[in-house]
Every structure is written in structure tokens, then in C-alpha cells.
Image (cartoon, rainbow, N blue to C red):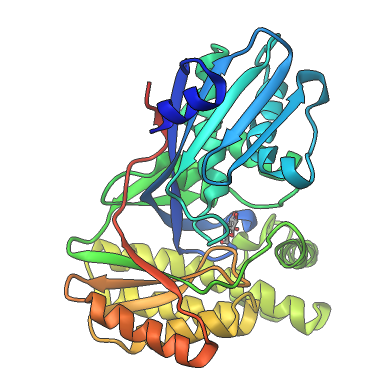
Length: 382
Ligand code: GLA
């Protein structure tokens, strides 16, 4: 598929092909940039990127899914607008690789194909970043470790695209494995995997509410968290980030925080604790506790962090009320996007349809839903 598409766009064979998956955030909502511990899974949907060297100093890109084509000169790599906007993630990766020391005297062709839904909260952005990073490193002979490839993806978001995200999406896309949950200690930048409990499945429901993370709300939440961390650091210098704090420290500083900032901080410190509890629940195979932690995480997003919306709340409530569901929650940045449910093998298509129909009756639209299986992390295909 990718090869034919590449050829149809550039009339030559690609030199390197790489692939990277989308992800689900399992638990640890907005905990990553607060330097706590988060968990996610790589899904089988992925983006494939193919590249070849050009003889001139231009970068040409084609996206099959977005039906877009764009070009820019090597000396003019900067944030693109309008029709060339789709180029920003790969261009950001290229810019970050050059900053990291990659030499590129000639330009490149890049084409991508995708099975990851865009704008749905499964991080198609991290997928294209990681696939691009692997492909370009091969093309320009710039070997990088897995962790550095993940860091390049995050740097592209933070420094080029302007999204102050943490390392969850790129980390999960990079370190994902089939049948595994990726655990990330975001402060130490340590990545490990835990087995996904046998006989469990993730169902994903897309609310259809578009989350535009760069624009506003995500950055606002990020700013509130940084503000709270600064206030807590004055109270206890050992607190260098929100994840260092206990709920008692946030309580003790209540008068110094606005009610809103207090709630944001409370969400983060309690969510971080829930991730540790999740680890214990998974270790002993207590799926009821796993589900309860997911539900508690959602309530905290809904009422304290206020990054849910009525459509997602509805999906979480309906899914949680279904038989064969351990738990459900908002997954990802929020303000729309997806709800996920962890189910046993008996949760059926008919049950999913029932939830979708109730959603339709209330909101007038059918949410897309699918059952995912986990898949491998990013890497070169050839
Ligand atoms: C988005 C960001 C991640 C993370 C989640 C919320 O997916 O890209 O870094 O902050 O939101 O947990």
C-alpha cells in the first residue's frame, strides 16, 4: 500500500519505510507533564511513512489519508499554514533531528498512509512523529536510540508545533507492545511494560467532539498546573513538580491557590496516586479495582480538571452501566475526543450499539466505536 502510494506521488521507490501506532491513555490524565507516572497502550492502528532522498534542496510531502501535497525548501523549514498545515508534524521532527545534529544537505520526499483516525484522541500526531523520525534517521544515516526517538517526537510538539504536551503519546507509540500496557515514569523518563490482563479488551467510542489541543484549553490546564507547582515549591522546596506533592500539600496551600487552580492540582496529585494503585491492582489481577480506578479517574477529570464534556460523560456513564464492563473513562487530552471502556470478552457488539443508539437519541449523532487490540510500537519496516 505505502509503496504504491509513494510511487504514485514521487515516481520512485522509497529508501526507508517506518511505522508507528496510535495510543490509548489507560490512566494518568494530564499527569505526564506534571512528571508523574502514566500508563497507555499502543493500538494496532498505525501510520506508515516512506521516504527517499531528493537531488535538490526541497522537502515534498504527500498524505494519502488527508489527500494533501506540499513542499518547502530546506532553508525555509518553519510552521506551515492552511493547505500545508498537515506538514507540521513531520517538519517539526525534521527540524528537531537537525538540531540534534543530523546533517541534511539534500531534501527528501515523504509519503504517509494511515489507519489511525485523526482528531479523535488516539494521537495520530505521535504516530506520524515517530514514524517520520525512524524513517528520516535511516535516510540520513543518523542512528538514534528508542528513547531519543521518543524525545524527538515530543520536542517536535513542544518546540515546533507549540503544544506543551508531556511524553505519554510519543512514549506509548515508541515503547508499545502487543498485549502490554506501557508504564512511563515521566520524571525519570523510564519506560516499562506490564502485561495487559488476559481476556480484557478496550472499546473506543469517539464522541465526535473535536478537541483542538494546541489552541487553548490544554495549554490553560498546563499553565494552571505549573502555577500550582510553583506555589507548592515555596511551601516545600522538595516539591519540584506536582507529582512530587501529596494531596495534603495541596490542601495546606488552599488559600494561596485560586479555587480553580486548587481543583486542577488536586486532580493531578490524586490521579498520580491512582496510577500507583492501578499498578498494584494489575499486579494482583483485581479487575474490579482496575475498573473502579478508571471510573474515579473520569470523575476527577469531569469535576476537578474539567476537561471532559457532556458527550464523553454520557458515554462513560452508559458504558459503566453495561454488563461486562470493568470501567470507563475519558482518554487523552479531553475537551472532546474519546471515551474508552475496559471490558471482558463477553462485551458484545450489540451492547456497544445500544450505547451508540442512546447517544444518538440524546445528541443526534452516532458515535463511531471499535474494539481495539494492542499492537507493536514504532520502528522501521525496511
Ligand atoms: C494529550 C497529550 C499528552 C497528555 C494527555 C493527557 O494526549 O499529548 O501528553 O498530556 O493529553 O494525559
